[in-house]
Amino acid sequence: MRIITVNVNGIRAAARKGFFEWLHKQKADVVCVQETKAQIHQLENNPIFFPTDYHCYYVDAIKKGYSGVAVYSKQKPVKVVCQYGDGEFDSEGRYLEVQFKHLAVVSLYAPSGSSSDERQQAKFRFMDSFMQHLKTLKRRRKEYIICGDLNIAHKNIDLKNWRGNKKNSGFLPEERAWLDTLFNQVGYLDIFREINQEEDQFTWWSNRGQAWANNVGWRIDYHIATPKLKSTATQQSIYKTQRFSDHAPLIIDYDLSI
Image 1 (tube, rainbow, N blue to C red):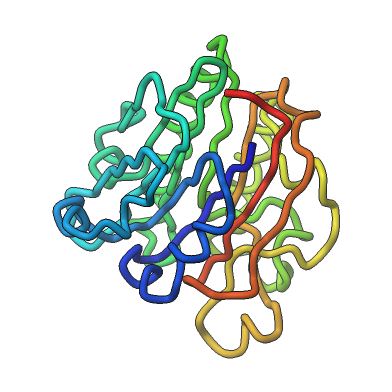
Image 2 (image 1 turned 90 degrees about the horizontal axis):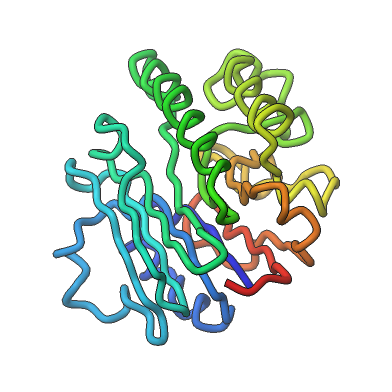
Protein backbone atom coordinates (compact mmCIF):
# COMPACT_ATOMS: atom_id res chain seq x y z
CA MET A 1 0.00 0.00 0.00
CA ARG A 2 1.09 3.54 -0.71
CA ILE A 3 0.78 6.32 1.87
CA ILE A 4 1.48 9.96 1.04
CA THR A 5 1.84 12.82 3.49
CA VAL A 6 2.03 16.46 2.44
CA ASN A 7 1.66 19.87 4.03
CA VAL A 8 -0.12 21.86 1.32
CA ASN A 9 0.09 25.27 3.07
CA GLY A 10 -3.43 26.06 1.88
CA ILE A 11 -5.35 23.38 0.02
CA ARG A 12 -7.01 25.82 -2.34
CA ALA A 13 -3.64 27.27 -3.32
CA ALA A 14 -2.26 23.75 -3.84
CA ALA A 15 -5.23 22.88 -6.03
CA ARG A 16 -4.47 25.85 -8.28
CA LYS A 17 -0.89 24.54 -8.62
CA GLY A 18 -2.05 21.14 -9.87
CA PHE A 19 -1.95 19.12 -6.65
CA PHE A 20 -5.06 17.07 -7.32
CA GLU A 21 -4.10 16.28 -10.91
CA TRP A 22 -0.78 14.98 -9.60
CA LEU A 23 -2.45 13.05 -6.79
CA HIS A 24 -4.74 11.24 -9.22
CA LYS A 25 -1.67 9.68 -10.87
CA GLN A 26 -0.10 8.44 -7.64
CA LYS A 27 -2.52 5.59 -6.93
CA ALA A 28 -2.13 6.13 -3.21
CA ASP A 29 -4.14 4.09 -0.74
CA VAL A 30 -4.09 6.77 1.97
CA VAL A 31 -3.25 10.45 1.64
CA CYS A 32 -2.58 12.60 4.73
CA VAL A 33 -2.84 16.35 4.21
CA GLN A 34 -1.86 19.10 6.63
CA GLU A 35 -2.42 22.85 6.84
CA THR A 36 -5.53 22.93 4.66
CA LYS A 37 -6.29 26.49 5.83
CA ALA A 38 -9.96 26.14 4.92
CA GLN A 39 -13.28 25.39 6.55
CA ILE A 40 -15.21 22.41 5.19
CA HIS A 41 -18.06 24.63 3.99
CA GLN A 42 -15.57 26.49 1.80
CA LEU A 43 -14.65 23.24 0.02
CA GLU A 44 -17.78 21.13 -0.13
CA ASN A 45 -19.25 22.72 -3.27
CA ASN A 46 -16.13 21.95 -5.31
CA PRO A 47 -15.64 18.26 -6.15
CA ILE A 48 -11.89 18.69 -6.67
CA PHE A 49 -11.45 18.66 -2.89
CA PHE A 50 -13.17 15.27 -2.65
CA PRO A 51 -11.14 13.11 -5.05
CA THR A 52 -13.01 10.39 -6.91
CA ASP A 53 -12.61 6.88 -5.47
CA TYR A 54 -11.58 8.20 -2.05
CA HIS A 55 -13.39 8.51 1.24
CA CYS A 56 -12.51 12.07 2.28
CA TYR A 57 -12.36 13.48 5.78
CA TYR A 58 -11.48 16.97 6.97
CA VAL A 59 -10.88 18.50 10.39
CA ASP A 60 -10.86 22.29 10.59
CA ALA A 61 -9.47 24.77 13.07
CA ILE A 62 -11.97 27.02 14.80
CA LYS A 63 -9.86 29.95 13.61
CA LYS A 64 -10.56 30.55 9.93
CA GLY A 65 -7.72 30.21 7.43
CA TYR A 66 -5.55 28.35 9.94
CA SER A 67 -4.16 24.85 10.32
CA GLY A 68 -6.54 22.00 9.41
CA VAL A 69 -5.87 18.39 8.36
CA ALA A 70 -7.43 15.86 6.00
CA VAL A 71 -7.25 12.19 5.07
CA TYR A 72 -8.25 10.59 1.78
CA SER A 73 -8.61 6.80 1.92
CA LYS A 74 -9.37 4.29 -0.85
CA GLN A 75 -10.84 1.90 1.72
CA LYS A 76 -13.57 3.10 4.01
CA PRO A 77 -12.31 3.22 7.62
CA VAL A 78 -14.14 1.37 10.34
CA LYS A 79 -13.75 4.46 12.53
CA VAL A 80 -12.69 8.09 12.15
CA VAL A 81 -11.30 10.04 15.14
CA CYS A 82 -11.12 13.82 14.81
CA GLN A 83 -9.19 14.75 17.97
CA TYR A 84 -6.64 13.30 20.33
CA GLY A 85 -7.96 14.70 23.58
CA ASP A 86 -6.22 18.02 24.26
CA GLY A 87 -8.72 20.84 23.89
CA GLU A 88 -6.09 23.50 23.25
CA PHE A 89 -4.78 21.76 20.15
CA ASP A 90 -7.88 19.89 19.04
CA SER A 91 -9.51 23.30 18.52
CA GLU A 92 -6.70 24.10 16.08
CA GLY A 93 -7.55 21.18 13.77
CA ARG A 94 -4.29 19.25 14.08
CA TYR A 95 -5.30 15.58 14.32
CA LEU A 96 -7.29 13.15 12.19
CA GLU A 97 -7.12 9.37 12.61
CA VAL A 98 -8.63 6.73 10.32
CA GLN A 99 -8.85 3.20 11.70
CA PHE A 100 -8.97 0.02 9.63
CA LYS A 101 -9.10 -3.60 10.78
CA HIS A 102 -5.37 -4.02 11.42
CA LEU A 103 -3.94 -0.54 10.93
CA ALA A 104 -4.64 3.06 11.83
CA VAL A 105 -3.22 6.10 10.01
CA VAL A 106 -3.02 9.60 11.50
CA SER A 107 -2.66 12.93 9.72
CA LEU A 108 -0.88 15.26 12.14
CA TYR A 109 0.08 18.91 11.97
CA ALA A 110 2.21 19.81 14.97
CA PRO A 111 2.50 23.46 16.05
CA SER A 112 5.38 25.65 14.92
CA GLY A 113 7.13 27.76 17.50
CA SER A 114 8.96 30.05 15.11
CA SER A 115 6.59 33.03 15.22
CA SER A 116 6.98 33.93 18.90
CA ASP A 117 8.08 32.67 22.31
CA GLU A 118 4.40 32.26 23.18
CA ARG A 119 3.92 29.83 20.30
CA GLN A 120 7.11 27.99 21.25
CA GLN A 121 5.70 27.46 24.72
CA ALA A 122 2.49 26.18 23.12
CA LYS A 123 4.59 23.80 21.05
CA PHE A 124 6.23 22.46 24.19
CA ARG A 125 2.77 21.90 25.73
CA PHE A 126 1.74 20.03 22.60
CA MET A 127 4.87 17.87 22.75
CA ASP A 128 4.09 16.91 26.35
CA SER A 129 0.47 15.99 25.76
CA PHE A 130 1.02 14.30 22.41
CA MET A 131 3.78 12.11 23.78
CA GLN A 132 1.28 10.75 26.29
CA HIS A 133 -1.15 10.11 23.47
CA LEU A 134 1.50 8.28 21.44
CA LYS A 135 2.25 6.06 24.42
CA THR A 136 -1.47 5.27 24.65
CA LEU A 137 -1.65 4.37 20.95
CA LYS A 138 1.32 2.05 21.28
CA ARG A 139 -0.50 0.00 23.89
CA ARG A 140 -3.33 -0.78 21.49
CA ARG A 141 -3.47 -3.93 19.41
CA LYS A 142 -3.58 -2.00 16.14
CA GLU A 143 -0.46 -0.90 14.30
CA TYR A 144 -0.13 2.85 13.74
CA ILE A 145 1.45 5.11 11.15
CA ILE A 146 1.47 8.79 12.17
CA CYS A 147 2.03 10.94 9.09
CA GLY A 148 2.60 14.64 8.99
CA ASP A 149 4.49 17.80 9.68
CA LEU A 150 6.16 17.64 13.10
CA ASN A 151 7.98 20.97 12.67
CA ILE A 152 11.11 19.34 14.12
CA ALA A 153 14.27 18.20 12.38
CA HIS A 154 15.77 15.33 14.34
CA LYS A 155 19.50 15.14 13.60
CA ASN A 156 22.20 17.19 11.89
CA ILE A 157 21.65 15.22 8.71
CA ASP A 158 18.03 16.41 8.63
CA LEU A 159 18.71 20.06 7.81
CA LYS A 160 21.30 21.83 5.73
CA ASN A 161 22.41 24.60 8.09
CA TRP A 162 22.31 22.69 11.34
CA ARG A 163 25.13 24.67 12.97
CA GLY A 164 23.28 27.96 12.56
CA ASN A 165 19.92 26.60 13.75
CA LYS A 166 20.78 25.10 17.13
CA LYS A 167 18.94 27.92 18.92
CA ASN A 168 16.02 28.13 16.49
CA SER A 169 12.59 26.56 16.78
CA GLY A 170 12.48 23.27 14.97
CA PHE A 171 16.00 22.27 15.99
CA LEU A 172 16.10 23.15 19.68
CA PRO A 173 17.72 20.63 22.03
CA GLU A 174 14.39 20.03 23.78
CA GLU A 175 12.67 19.28 20.47
CA ARG A 176 15.36 16.91 19.27
CA ALA A 177 15.37 15.17 22.67
CA TRP A 178 11.61 14.67 22.30
CA LEU A 179 12.23 12.70 19.11
CA ASP A 180 15.08 10.81 20.78
CA THR A 181 12.62 9.71 23.45
CA LEU A 182 9.97 8.80 20.89
CA PHE A 183 12.31 6.62 18.85
CA ASN A 184 14.78 5.29 21.43
CA GLN A 185 12.59 4.85 24.50
CA VAL A 186 8.93 4.71 23.49
CA GLY A 187 9.90 2.61 20.49
CA TYR A 188 8.35 4.22 17.43
CA LEU A 189 10.19 4.19 14.10
CA ASP A 190 11.20 7.00 11.76
CA ILE A 191 10.28 4.99 8.67
CA PHE A 192 12.04 7.24 6.19
CA ARG A 193 15.35 6.82 8.01
CA GLU A 194 14.81 3.08 8.26
CA ILE A 195 15.26 2.87 4.48
CA ASN A 196 17.14 6.04 3.53
CA GLN A 197 20.28 7.26 5.33
CA GLU A 198 21.39 9.72 2.65
CA GLU A 199 22.17 13.38 3.25
CA ASP A 200 20.26 16.30 1.72
CA GLN A 201 16.89 14.59 2.00
CA PHE A 202 14.58 17.48 2.82
CA THR A 203 10.81 18.05 2.79
CA TRP A 204 10.57 21.79 3.55
CA TRP A 205 12.35 24.87 2.23
CA SER A 206 11.99 28.47 3.36
CA ASN A 207 10.51 30.85 0.82
CA ARG A 208 13.30 33.29 1.65
CA GLY A 209 16.32 33.67 -0.59
CA GLN A 210 17.28 30.74 -2.79
CA ALA A 211 16.56 27.96 -0.30
CA TRP A 212 14.67 25.79 -2.80
CA ALA A 213 17.08 26.37 -5.67
CA ASN A 214 20.07 25.53 -3.47
CA ASN A 215 18.32 22.70 -1.58
CA VAL A 216 18.83 24.43 1.75
CA GLY A 217 16.03 22.60 3.48
CA TRP A 218 14.76 20.73 6.51
CA ARG A 219 13.28 17.25 6.91
CA ILE A 220 10.31 17.94 9.16
CA ASP A 221 7.65 15.69 7.57
CA TYR A 222 7.49 12.11 8.80
CA HIS A 223 5.98 8.66 8.69
CA ILE A 224 6.25 7.48 12.31
CA ALA A 225 5.25 3.85 12.86
CA THR A 226 4.88 1.24 15.56
CA PRO A 227 7.75 -1.29 15.79
CA LYS A 228 6.10 -4.25 14.04
CA LEU A 229 6.00 -2.23 10.82
CA LYS A 230 9.79 -1.96 10.65
CA SER A 231 10.26 -4.43 7.82
CA THR A 232 7.16 -3.49 5.83
CA ALA A 233 8.40 -0.27 4.18
CA THR A 234 9.63 -1.15 0.70
CA GLN A 235 10.45 2.18 -0.95
CA GLN A 236 10.31 5.92 -0.38
CA SER A 237 10.49 9.14 -2.37
CA ILE A 238 10.27 12.87 -1.83
CA TYR A 239 8.45 14.38 -4.81
CA LYS A 240 10.11 17.58 -6.02
CA THR A 241 9.35 17.75 -9.75
CA GLN A 242 6.45 20.11 -9.10
CA ARG A 243 5.93 22.46 -6.16
CA PHE A 244 2.51 22.57 -4.54
CA SER A 245 3.66 24.39 -1.39
CA ASP A 246 6.81 25.06 0.62
CA HIS A 247 6.75 21.34 1.54
CA ALA A 248 7.26 18.33 -0.72
CA PRO A 249 5.08 15.21 -0.62
CA LEU A 250 6.69 12.29 1.21
CA ILE A 251 5.68 8.96 -0.35
CA ILE A 252 6.30 5.58 1.26
CA ASP A 253 5.16 2.18 0.00
CA TYR A 254 4.43 -0.58 2.50
CA ASP A 255 3.97 -4.30 2.14
CA LEU A 256 0.78 -4.17 4.19
CA SER A 257 -2.90 -4.92 4.07
CA ILE A 258 -5.29 -2.82 6.08
